[in-house]
Image (cartoon, rainbow, N blue to C red):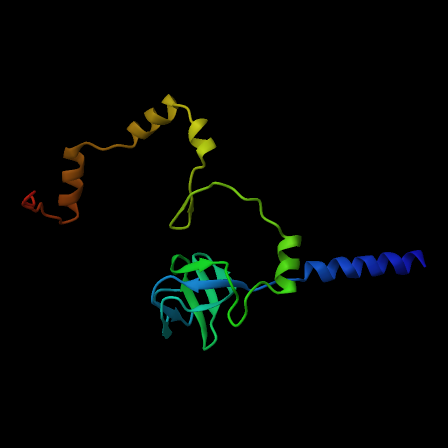
Length: 166
C-alpha cells in the first residue's frame, strides 16, 4: 500500500511537471512570420498589427507564434506577451496550473534588445573599479595606429561635411 501510494504521488508530481501552456501574445506591429528562427528564413505570411495568438516555442530572440490562421517565427520585440488568448477571454486551467508551478518572481530589470539590463539596485550598489579602467586603457590604440591599420587593409579616409544645424 505504501509503495503504491508513493508511486501515485510520484505520478501526480510528473503530471504537474508536464503541464505547459501556450502564452498569449499580441503583435505590436505588422510582422513577417518566418519559417525558421532567422532573418534569412522564408516568410510564411505577413501578420497585421493587433493580431493575437499563442507563443508555442522560443529560440533565442525568436518566438514561435501560432495565430488563428498560421504559425511561424517572430522577432520577440514585435510581440506583447500576456492578455487574452486567441479565441478566448482568459487563461485556461492549464495556463493557470503552469503559472502556479513555474511562478517567476517579479523584478524591476530593464531589458534592451534581449540583453539583461541593470536594476535600480545594481546601479545604486555600483562602485568605481580603477583596475578595470586601467585594463580598458591598455586595450586602446592611438589614432596613428588606427590610420596605419586602416591603410594596411586598403581603406581610404573620407571627408564628410557636417549637417546644417537649424
